[in-house]
Amino acid sequence: MPDLRVEIAGVRLLNPLVLASGIWGTTPELLERAARAGAGAVTAKTCTPAARRGHRNPTALDWGHGLLNAMGLPNPGAEEEAAMLAEARRRIGLLGVPLIASIAADTVEGFAEAAAVVSRARPDLIEVNISCPNVAADHGEMFASSPAAAAEATRAAKGATSIPCLVKLSPNVADIAAVARAVAAAGADGITAVNTMPGMLVDPETGCPILANRTGGISGSALKPVALRCVYEVCAAVGIPVIGTGGIGSGADALEMISVGAAAVGVGTAVAACGEGIFARILDEMGGWMVAHGFDGLAAIRGRAHRATPVAGETNLPPVPGWRPHEG
Image (cartoon, rainbow, N blue to C red; front, side):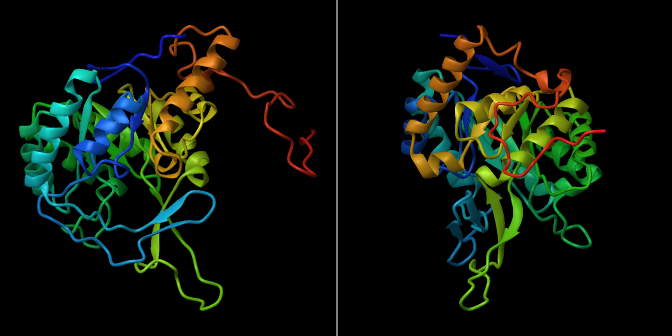
């Protein structure tokens, strides 16, 4: 079996698969199940300084190509989250699986507060989710939409904890590489890329948006091409490790994400769809492909998309009906 061990901001993982935030990250029991099922690290659901009720139902829909959700970040608040994280750490500590806390806030000060509170549970890493509204801004934009705002949130979180911080970026920005450079310069120890992409579904019978919030975030297979492009650009822009997240449901998906430069790979929607067995399946598929192609580790695969030159006609993908390569 090839060596699948990786390192993120000084934290060692037995394999590159990370349970993404928002899926199964609500209780110590679920985090332990993911760890025992083969996740290399597990991320808790994002918490905010104070409790949030979230949006009213319907909040999520499986539309056949992934999920569309507008949960509204429901969570019990950072204090209760810290207690949950402490119990989760106790449960998974002997398994050698790192625990990642995830925080969000609507003000810079809130990021510092949440980081300080969850640090009491001593997670191995803290994910700083800046893909949330900045109420201090004139138009309530995400912190992730502005390099300056993203850097400010990063500095606030970093200043409140000694635990390495991974900043979670949004794909819905004009220049994700500029945001990545800004958070790296502000002290981020790593990056998670990407969060969901805004979308909408409408009931054709009534003409009404299906979600109560009208719009929601697209995750799953429909997000993968966007996520790959974003991670490619982020990895070209910064030298800190990146957890690539978005549409990962197979060994091939994970290897694609590592090929664009990701140090590790987040798995989220596929866990909701397939259960915890998805981790073992992805690892088996990765290992089988690597053995068949003569790779004994991930180092030679990581970032090869930045070195490779596409050649017309050379692909393992099925042909698109009616499509022919452009000539001339």
